[in-house]
Amino acid sequence: MSGQLSHGPAAVPGAITATHAPARGRWWLQYASPQAFYGPAGVLASLLLPLSAVLAAAGLYVGFLIAPTDAQQGEAYRIIFVHVPAAWLSMVIYAAMAFWSAVGLVANTRLSAMMAGALAPTGALFTFLALWTGALWGKPTWGAWWVWDARLTSELLLLFLYLGFIALQAAIDEPRRADRAGAVLALVGTVNLPIIYFSVKWWNTLHQGASVSVASAPTIATPMLLGMLVMALAMWAYAAAAALVRLRCIILEREGQSAWVARVARGGAA
Amino acid sequence: MIAPLGWTIRRDLLLACRRSADALGSLAFFAIACSLFPLGVGPEPAALRGMAPGVLWVAALLSATLSLPRLFSADHADGTLEQMLLASEPLVLIVAGKAVAHWLVSGLPLVLLSPLLALQFGLDAQALAVLVASLLLGTPILSLVGAVVAALSLGARGSGILVALLALPLYVPVLVFGAGSVDAMGVGGGVAAHLLLLGAGLGFALALAPWAAAAALRIALE
Image 1 (cartoon, rainbow over the protein chains, first blue to last red):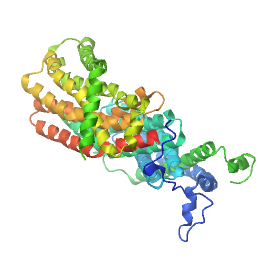
Image 2 (image 1 turned 45 degrees about the horizontal axis):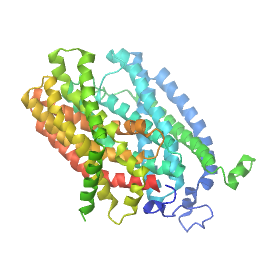
Image 3 (image 1 turned 120 degrees about the vertical axis):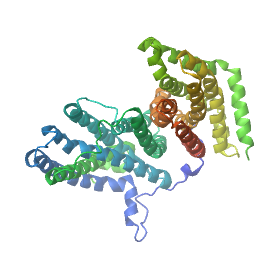
Image 4 (image 1 turned 180 degrees about the horizontal axis):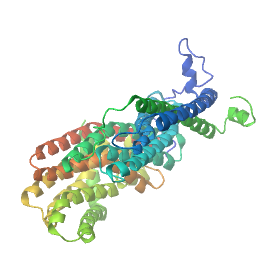
């Protein structure tokens, strides 16, 4: 019953296919087709994965062996080499997810929605990692695994937003409907995220004096900063590679009926 | 232009009157959820007075979440929703009308019941007035944002639990400013700021939520 109705802007057949002759200067638009992007995604992922491994090795070496021990926090501070980049990525990935969702809704490209879906689990993973490493750092430094600090609380809510997105996509059987519903949810979440952050921040300052604050950390030594930046780059590369590998799986799953997937399955090129 | 808003509200109110058990159910849930807290944390009056705004607000959030799946599901099941989508009247107004009716049926009774429950928690008259004002401003936001979530999860598997999972994180600012407005009295001033922010949130939700819910309905029924 619900499959027969098709109207409104969502039903405009605007998807770009690989058979389209690309206009001059718009050659990159051909990669909006899942089939055309399947190959390049694999190449990108196979470049980014080793890069992230090398960067992570370098970053951890700088972090654990070169960076000096912190005067106040001792060795416990070294978790920041994982914690800060993970927290950074947890937010960047949500922004990327919302961006691809918006592109998918506006341009009606299937690949954009697939990309948003591919980013979500990686984003949830990094959010969880940021919370987990934050707890590991909080115990020796603050004396508690968890405090209801504004940042911690809003990071926890970010995790819930990721889980909601994943749950919504998983609960809708039709892939295209799941894509669009997820996209609307991601955009609603993006509008709400700053409001959540500021409300939680205000709530926190109202209820208790800021006895612990991540914001007032002292300026840090150069090797510490370097280690953190290299680790951040490693995690960016890993996140991109993981999302691309997942994207390839999603493409194969969705395009399972088409001839080119059968060719790929037989070992041919896309 | 504004007529569809009126007839949607009237129709949904009429339907709610014919099936009054639904609305009364979520109201009863609100009362029961509030009554469980003293049993759980002990009957000390000072402690109860301190947590009363938070308890009432959390119960209001849960009660609103509980009644959300009903917002569109019955109309979806009997095909009315498809007719609403096909109608020449703007879908946004119809969706807004349904959200308003949802608030009138599930939000407003809750606001009217809240002074009684707040008295049981030992709130004084001034705090009680602030609490009712905050609920009056905040619960329409729950219905409006909830309409988006209900539309998104329409026809999804296990939509009841999904609605809770999606809606509750989005409700956090309402909870913070709603419960915070009563707490702000104790620390001196700030009540007006909280209520103004809730009002701003209501304006924001009124301006955006019906459009998002209408888009979500189109997606759900295409």
